[in-house]
Length: 158
Image 1: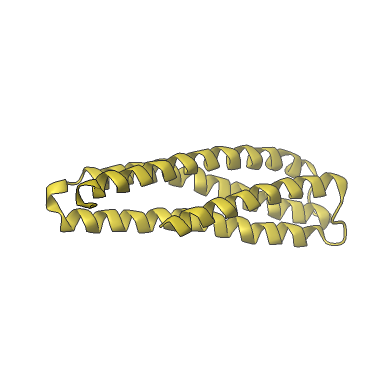
Image 2 (image 1 turned 120 degrees about the vertical axis):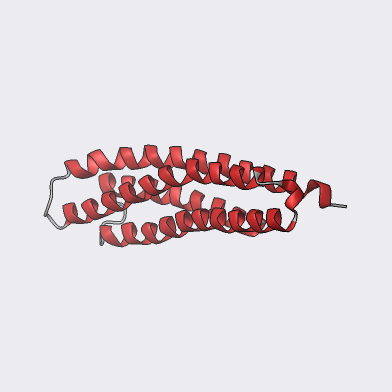
């Protein structure tokens, strides 16, 4: 559990640097040979990070459910807590992913000369804002998930 959580934070940090690099590259051309190669490279890391975050909570939710079923005296309050975390986590994570991918596509289309640069000027700040917002939600969800697991297993730890 801890390995995947730490790996998620590492990938989110690299994604933040990558999204910043995409913006700087768009405006200052420090990777001028192939703009889309940087976009695709960052996209792979970004998608890996977001996917890992979502699957972490899927896996943790399954573990909480199985543990609660084995220990029926716990009831379903921990399961409901995990569901509440997922309900607050998934919408901003998915929205950020969709807007990020749209930004990358429009950035590529702009450099191919197919669309106006304004698409990037609109989508980049929106993507950056949503990324920060979803990262904060993900951080709070990681804390909540850890608290649920610790509270659930407290009576059974020695």
